[in-house]
Length: 264
Image 1 (cartoon, rainbow, N blue to C red):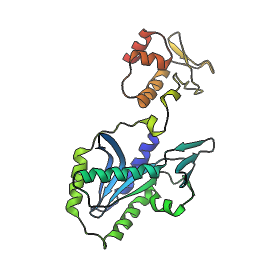
Image 2: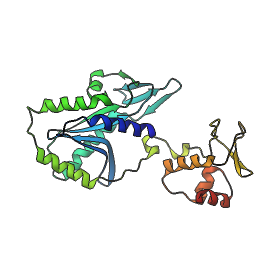
Image 3: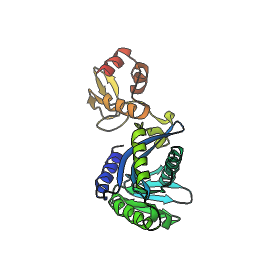
Image 4: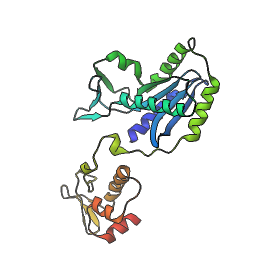
């Protein structure tokens, strides 16, 4: 999550260079038919709306346009993610419907996928030209947006009043977004292994003994190794936890110990 946040802040820095006729809105969460949808950055002009989805991938990323797959190779392992183009295209659809429901349709919606790191190597398997049109590094986004906007200036009617109404509607209805890590990375709750990671060797399974957490693998002792485990729990399952849930996740039997941990 921290990488994703840093990527969005990099984009924020670069889009500040856009002229004053553009309005930039960050971390937008709206509700459509009782379901929330979230957009990293929305840029509005009187000619078009641009949704920017930021990705912070390391190593090499391969996009398979036929299978709609996104694969990341870090050198050690191969990871699969939701296909970002499908994600952002759904956001385009959701925003379009949201505007239609409020009588605010009339400005076209486009999107870009922005990569936070220039060191990310992008490979395309399939329709390379279609990927080139919508993907860029964060530094390129302001120029890409301005070029696309300029291409519409002779074809479309400038609608500053509609743009202002859309901005006001988004700001008035924007909600807080609850990030669902399990859904984002397609993880089943049953796959989550409870327990405490050793701060030294990172292995799971520290045991409580004599007022400390002890690692059976490397014999490291820690007073507060449970803090990181609880942070992981709140990230994965929400901001509340019961005494029973605490005991099950940390692997302890004592209600008294769980109460002390939660109170501290």
